[in-house]
Length: 146
Image (cartoon, rainbow, N blue to C red):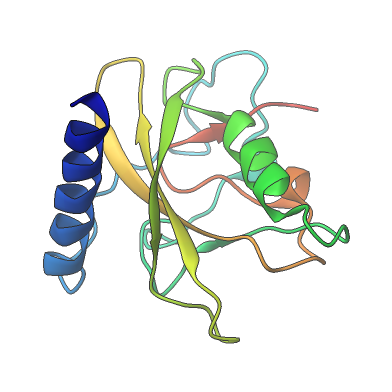
């Protein structure tokens, strides 16, 4: 029963994403680079592009030179993100959808801030030259200092 409910939830989430794919993505409020920032964040790795990561057309691009390193690169990237208060966020993979320029699927994640706010991130894990630690955070998020 539990697995059926989980499957139904994922199917509903994917249908919702497909239904709303043409709408402007829901994004967190931007963080000014001049604002007072929490300790331990890297303000140099903050994107100014409001669609970066929040749109199928502009996913976060990460990867690994290892043949099967893409999922690990995604987790490394997601684990490096912080919410607007500088706290770690939670994430869950919703599935795959869309496609990159090579026709490979994008992964779709739901991220949750410490405040409970939820957003959808799109990630392309098939970019071996894009090291997770060097990719910027989407608008409204921080990256941990290395």
